[in-house]
Image 1: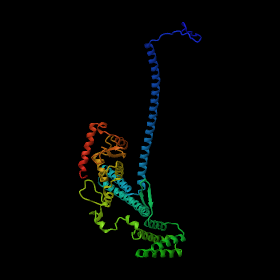
Image 2 (image 1 turned 180 degrees about the vertical axis):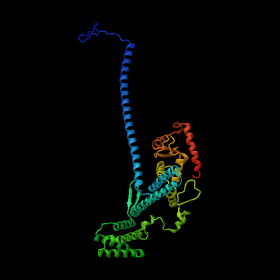
Image 3 (image 1 turned 30 degrees about the vertical axis):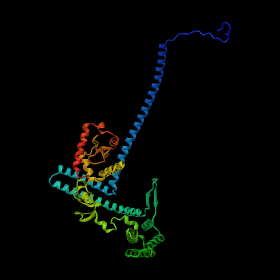
Length: 448
């Protein structure tokens, strides 16, 4: 300010008037109120976000449940439709096992009605009528078997020729596959094409003669009794074609040519690729290994022709005898257990821990395990539908009859994600499972 010897101008001075004094306590309370307002708005936004996320999760859950319900219903309808097609148009051995099982079920039901309702001569007459109906149904199934065997034979022949003509294939380090044709695969491919050509129908006369000429040049490369017979039949058909004989009269001759050429294709001397596909090995010394005697069939067969159960003491009957005995007497359908065993082995492959016991048991062993040990129902929900799977009880150990549990697919999926069984299940439930494991260990004591 101005004083002696110093002048300060007041032109730019401002007049300041003191306001109301705010104590720290009031200021702090005002700031706390502002913070509470900010937090309330933020928490409202956070709650809205959480509620919207919960609503979205709920909608997703509802959509997933609807999709799962639709999927399960479609799977069930597809299974029923497939089973209906298997009954109406049987093609495989499993399909005929299903028919024989249904026939036995029908016979037992009719027999039960007859025993309850009829007596004396009426009962004998009803039993004779039932036997007559059963005979007619067996004959009908037999006709279907003959038709299916004919179709399956053609498929097996074509599959054999395709496998022989397939190129060599191996996997490279980058995961891609490399294919290579050899002189033997090229030879097999030519023979497959010729076989398909001689079995083609509705060819003109010139086309048929060209096919026969190609076949004749192919078999002329080797001189033996088989090739001479084929050439003789080819000349005979060519002569008959030139004479104008109807194709219907040449059907038997063409069938003989096709059959003899198939023998030519299966001979390793003429088709070297066929050697690895034949059931009978070319080395006679290999026939002395793993050969067992089937007393029912009175034949010596390789070990692959026997289904050995887990508690068997001997080799027993071969596969064909067991199938014939099942169709004639027991008439049980093992297709469901065969599918269950296939799924079990596929799931064990996913663990990649050298699991072995799942590959030793057979369908009958699995049937005993499911029906007698687990009662054919889920131990959690008592669900007894076909939608059941056998999974590991303890994931750290390999699957075995004493380390498994029967659950539905959804329950098995949830069980596979558990890390601590003692925390997830109650003590009573765990003791119940361990009791079943003890029963299974006693029955399957011969397994390693």
